[in-house]
Amino acid sequence: MKRSLVLIMAAAAMVACNSKSKSEQTAEDVQKSVLTKSTTAEEATVYLTETYTSEIEPYKENDITPAASGLHIERILVDVGDKVTANQVVATLDKTTLRQQEAQLSIVEDTYNRMKPVFEAGGISEQQLVQYENQYNMQKEVVDNLRRNSEIRTPISGVVTARNFESGDLFASQPILHIMQIDKLKVMANISEQYFPNVKVGMPVDIAVDIYPGEVFEGRVSLIYPALDTATRTFKVEITVPNTQNKLRPGMYARATFNMGSKQGVMIPDIAILKQQGSNEHYVYVIQGDSVVRRSVQMGRQVEDRIDILSGVSAGEVVATTALTKLSDGAKIELKNN
Image (cartoon, rainbow, N blue to C red; front, top):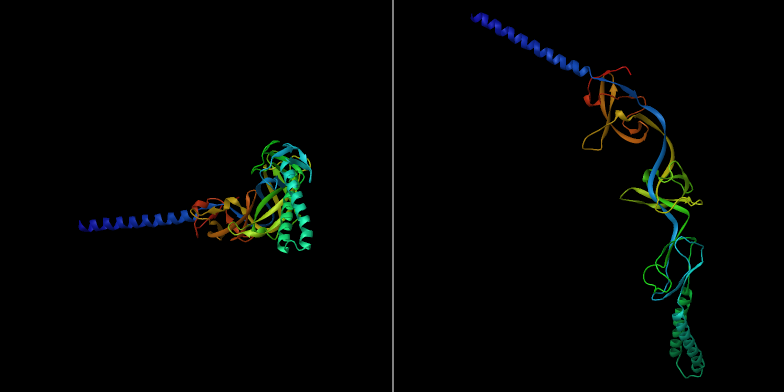
């Protein structure tokens, strides 16, 4: 009886061992049987175009403000929407104060001229004569300033975009008028430092606005700021845009597209790239024989469904494109027929 019990236990142990062996073999078979498709990393020409968004700005703008405060505005000769040319009179100020100061200047000048012969005769000292001369010069400067401000001229050509006073108002802190030059406009773009050698003054830039879908306005780089922003690692570029048809307006939302040239890159499908959760790492599975190797990659420009790989994969290497969530570093694979 005891012998029979021993034989039964031995048989059970053998069955358990055989079962375990079969289980391990099945797991190994499952690992080897991960099916995936693949593609080859190809060398290709990558065209470097970058688009930046910004608001359209006037090429120049100016606040029309008298140099002296506390003066009444006699007349404002233009209104919002009017076109003006450089040096045009756009407003005049009340001349009452000017006439008063001119009368005072006449008195001071007369006194100074009468004191000259008195000084020459020894009636007053040189210091006293200098005081009379200083009074005359100061009063003359006051009058000259008022004369300059009796007629307010615009320093630029453009369009009146704001009028803050009416004729007869007392000039306070606000500008009388605001004028913008809009026959040409400008767009400012903050460009990544890697393109600093590519951007040149005079290079063409395509400008698009949502209000005119499909239409492209040609601008040109007119100014490159010499210093980079240390916080964003970008440099500022000014683009001048002709506006002879007056289609564009300051404040419009615009997209500026730069053609930075081209380079040779290594392209793979975007579906082959995974992102590590909780980090900025991107990686692919490179196929080597019947297994895969996980490889971190640095991504460049995306062109349709392909991405330029800056580092991590070389042209000619084969990467997995399907069943990526089932793969791990060193996993065995079996390639599907594409």
